[in-house]
Length: 431
Image (cartoon, rainbow, N blue to C red):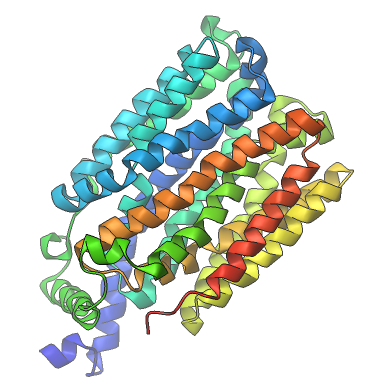
């Protein structure tokens, strides 16, 4: 039996493939949907800004600070949240996260001034803290390392899918301005916050914490998966099993620095994308929403192709560095673009390169994290990285208010992304 578990008999590969197909179908579509709602509730403020900023008197710097302040509380509560998740299980903790962030996101419709905007964004970050690293940690409990980049890319393509569908949806919700006595931006926060509450309840019913608890897997499939994951864990037994080892690891901190550049660029452009497109095209709010889907569509294609190729070759570092440098070139071109067509093409290249690093990055990061240290290490990398989520939009807001242009800000994002890609080459592989 053990030899069959290891896949040495002919039935092994068939059993492995059947098991992983079942696990994939059980988790990835659900996580994909959860992350779409999560990302929408983060970036919808960019579309709301088309109406909200003038309605409550927000300038470019104040809006950039408020958009980015989300990440301060997110980072502050990230590690404690993920450690709690590792203790109580993903099912209950992710459900709690979703329900509380849905309530806070919907409540943003009631903001009336700059101070209230800051408070609600801070509370939203605190509510969401632990969600993304919690999902990554959950994947390490179910997917062997050689299937992890595709699994991460499989649900994280929701980031770009949210951009593809979120733009037109947000534009349509903004067009409800005046209905029921509410402004369009208020309808936007309300209607995009409620799904998180509903899905939080769904998570309680569908998520399973560990393979040992998976009654929906056959006994043979469950046994194979448990044995495979235990074998990987045993092989890495000496690697960062404690929080002390994790936090003292230079490799973990280097990965955190690499990741810092990704949220910096992702949210630096994401929170401002509607206004960039609006300024270049002078289109209606709905048209801006439709046009904003184009860069995310390019990103979805790039993310899937790079994730698959990374898993097929088993290589991670160059699959981070290559797309990062391509994305950096896109950001530089955005700064020089003077027409909507060229800008959209450059934004598409930038977005495709930027989001394509994510699958290989998290596969590399989780390849040397095991045991209790894994939850803390994933949260540490994500926490330090997401400080970039505060820096990016704040920086772009200050640059825009100072220069009355987005060009210099795009060049800074390009330089940061290229640096992150080059730093990834310095990370020592796990094997």
